[in-house]
Image (cartoon, rainbow, N blue to C red; front, top):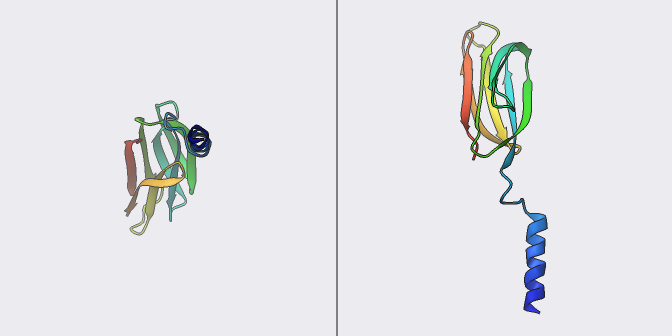
Length: 116
């Protein structure tokens, strides 16, 4: 009887929880601000640096990555007013992980880290 209860408990745990050996993470970069455009530089899904000029905000980029991977995003506002703001955010598995905001003429926000 104890074996049956143990096996049922293990089956429930295996099918209801995320596999602890799965190191993949869903990553989303997001750029927002009160400016209409920004220049965005980021570490892409293949581990290379990409740069997009004059993207319309809000802007997003989604990809899957693994624990231990370095992720990076930087955005420079495309407008130069003292009240211009730009924010970059990195989400991991739909949870806000890192963000940065800068304000000012041609401001730059940057966020980076190693996935845990």
